[in-house]
Image 1 (cartoon, each protein chain N blue to C red):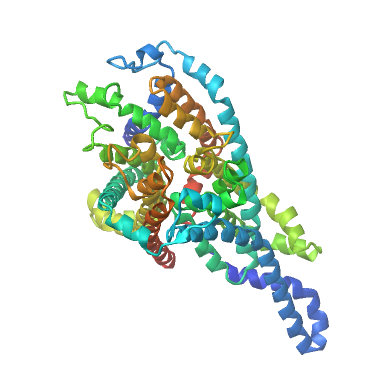
Image 2 (cartoon, one colour):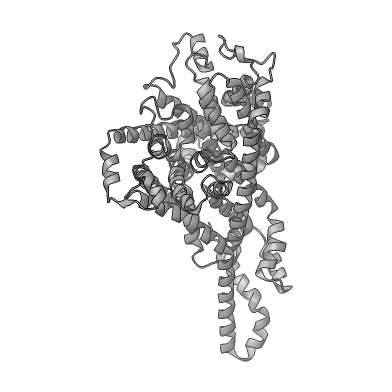
Length: 272
Length: 332
């Protein structure tokens, strides 16, 4: 009896999920629709005869954008890890005086609207000569993930048993050695989580790309889609194909790191 | 967050370093005190050495842009200012300009409606789903993970998908509306509907966040409480509204306030779907600021910064509520 009711709940769950994910399905469906059927009435609800001209266009026209976003993403991950991992270690294990104030500062930093950061960075990068460069974009994108990174690292590293850190100290390892050869290897999971999110947020950024890098030679994939939207509103299959390709990192994150994702949402909200 | 376990850790660190020193120190008590103090001092030094990159980063890349933005809002920044690097100080002119602009009440009203409707629906749908998934049926973990997809997609992707689904002539939403006998809606081309259209897309994106937080909150409520309520003869809905919901209050407060701060910031979705138009019909404060600064035409960076600062004041006021709610949740 309960068993059957359980499965009935599953059916309801599947239906709800299907409704929720309909836009994602529609994106894939449109990306496979031939150009002349895009405005058909009724619209083709299922890609019976998938057409890959949209994807051919993506590979043809969007490859440089994808490569740029990838590069910027990797750069962002490195900056975030270098800044956040030592800070997380200090806050979790070294009991700095004023640590609580710093954590508070990070929470506040997370709340600054992006448009304000963009305008501030615009002026600063203008005087530093970083406008329209990938370095500038990497710095700006990293601000999206540094507070998150520090909070995650602190939360994970608090759980590292003090005994193993002490053992290393008794063996004569200094603070830096302990951090590098004990704390970091043990924190692999948190490094993966922070890296994945830093990459994803940098990959998804549109605001900084469209303000700080608007004249740059190398443009990111979000700008690629945005230009498509502006230029040829007829080619919705190509736009949707680009959107599908741009969603790959998110899909990857969900499949590979599913258990970290929920932790990522909750961190910085409930857990800290 | 860091308060709880820290004292223990801290003293451990000090003990570790003073262990060997203790033997010598036993001979002369004042020297022991001295060594302990210098060890604590060394530990502080090490801690701050590890924090240095982040402190420099925070000053250079959060505080400095914020201050530049504040400074900018009191200046008359023109195209010439970019070349000379100077802009005339003009006091509160930018603020007077934007506050007396007829666009200001529109932007404020749109921001309020956008945030209020987003929060109301995201939260109630998220809560209903959290309760639903809390029943732990077969496949529930997988389905719950799939619900995260909208949150993970690049905003630009979600926004363009919704823009196409809401296309007046060829959009699938109007197709469905007509199939069930309703009139098509000019979602993004009519000033009456554009704000609703971008709000709907934003609700969709925000549901996963609410679901995950509220689900975690439900998980934290001990099962016995529900059992006790059931034994006392409470019906399911009574148990929910009288027992579960009040216990969920701290988590709900955090979810709503955090959602509020995030929703105030929303830019990408509206910009890609409607550019804040037609006219100013879906223009929020964030969109207005971007329009003034980067929306084409001659950039009005001073007024743009002033609008941004109005936004930040609103965000910070609610941010303080958030941090207080969080502290309270931690204490209980």
